[in-house]
Image (cartoon, rainbow, N blue to C red; front, side, top):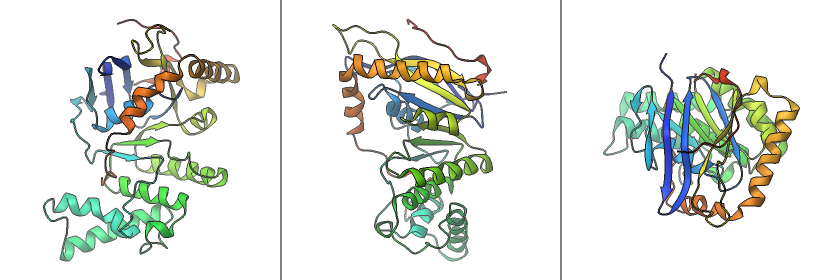
Length: 295
């Protein structure tokens, strides 16, 4: 069976700064991969590569056996930590926009029966994320949790194969986070999604995902901190995790934070680039692996 996402010897460099190196992954359809690692280790860069907003310096990414298109598309939806909805549009129009752009790329407006169908589809998706009562409300009238629900609806209405989540719950209160965990879990199962989610909360990663990916530098040189990038140091089916493994991963991430605080510079630089507008659009049984890999 062809993997949903296949990553072969992936590298990403910005000038002399190596951000990611020698990443090889095979991710099956329906996997929910949570991604953890020290700040600045390339997690967001990895998501941007999957989105098509960045291109690999070396290696390749395949989506259902075909090279990933080098630009964002409706087959990949994304939700950011910062609320990525259009403030001048109502909740309904935010979700309708992707359908209208797909149906009328030049004008961005549908009419007649096509517009009614788009409205009905958008309203149904808002109902599915718990915003059926807020169709005509604008984002500034919605709470943080409601805005993230709106961003999810905005992505899922395009029926993506891949959903990318960049710390989507980081700005939410604990109670709202718990509600969002349940919502994302339900939408993942109902929509047959393959999910990649960045989180700084390791327990959240174990709770939500089916597979945990830990990003860390494979090699360290204090005299040349930019020379080496991060790779996947743990690839762990969540069902096989135990408390000792959890503690070991936490210790590794903490050590990396202390060893190379300057390693965040490249990823922070990439995050200052213009972000994509809201998307209107492997067998994990190998167990855990830990160790350095050289090219």
